[in-house]
Length: 286
Length: 254
Image (cartoon, rainbow over all chains, first blue to last red; front, side, top):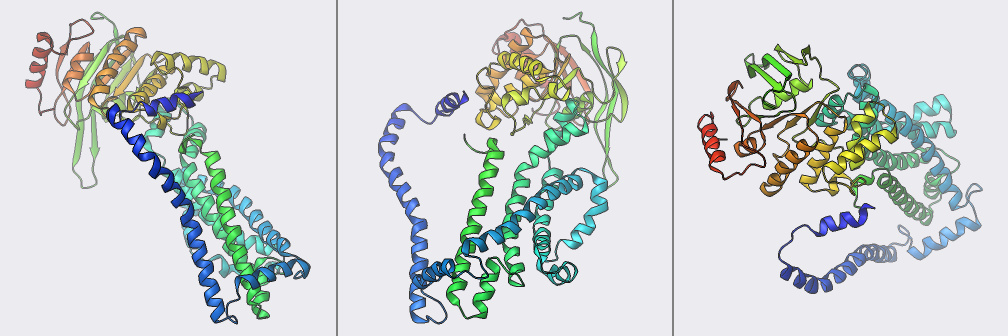
């Protein structure tokens, strides 16, 4: 219902006299559409430049850097001659499965733990310093121990990714919860909210943007950690493809894996920001 | 109204903050004051002096260092169901729609959805925002946002409404309009209102009585009764002479 009214609200904001208004719309219409085309072309331009640079460099040292065309052929070959019985999609799915499993667990536990230490002073005093101590350890540093304890199977990989994704979720959630504006809590007090209501109706929604910042950075962290974990020992996954390429001097395979990693990473980021926009509708214009 | 019974009484309210450097800071000192039933009481004071602290103590957001607050003869501690507040910085939840913001008090009380929607809709209409129930605060202008704040405060059907410089952040034109609006709303839905401001004209335009506070620490300096009928004419001689009287009695230019 409110769409038309909101529009009229904004339109009715005084923006100079009527005379000027008419003039502006006449003169500004042309540049606006031209601008739009420029902004559509600019990203394509940068991609084109990179591909050109790639072609140029690969022409000079084809042994170091394979040409894009060779990479394309190498990718097709991945479907006819699978590596370890998996074609490219199979390897992508192996990596994604590990990341998504770890992410879902990290989000659930991380948000719960972040809310706990952000909301409850005692919990923060209890867990805060231990968490600060464990936090700076890069997840990859755990790989040797975890491999010794749990072997090289799926569980170990998911666990390593979980370690890398849990912390950003906890930190962002905790900061978001503990920085809830005093004014909002006063509103809760005035209207006699109990602790549960103050937490679920005020603190958590006000922390949602921070929580989503944690979800975003955990997603990109998870995608990086899974590849590192796979490179150190896996039978499937994009990380394995890179290692395989390195062992067999197959630079084209390495490039195919790298480009795939970039594309999937960008898609993951796009999906999380889509979810964020759906979950926080008040932050965007309709 | 003049003979209205006493609704709320403050006796000897003092609020002292101790700073870490050792020196104490007294924001409010020994305020004794009766607020009558359904009156529009304005607390007028210089810039940063204890007015908000006073409201916060009545609301139960802060505790008085000494003195007591009583409502209908009963000592008040930690606020009351029948006291509500309109905030200077609006304090609307940006993630809630107008409707959800207005019904928040009833929601916290555990009223079922139908009841609170009905009550909220009634007050949204009262403040002139019918049709904007599903808008988010960021889509509203400053004046409209504070209308939401007023509707929210009214929605729990309080007996006392505290208003902490509610129009302080509005531009002059919107402010005049909102001053007229708050009088219209109050005349339609009579409640006891305690309205804090640092603006003399606003105080005289709105108040049945005006409590003039001193510079820090805030004490009651003088209480003025405004008899002029509403709507008040801001350039009538009566208005201007009262304005001069209060202005000359004020500690700082406000």
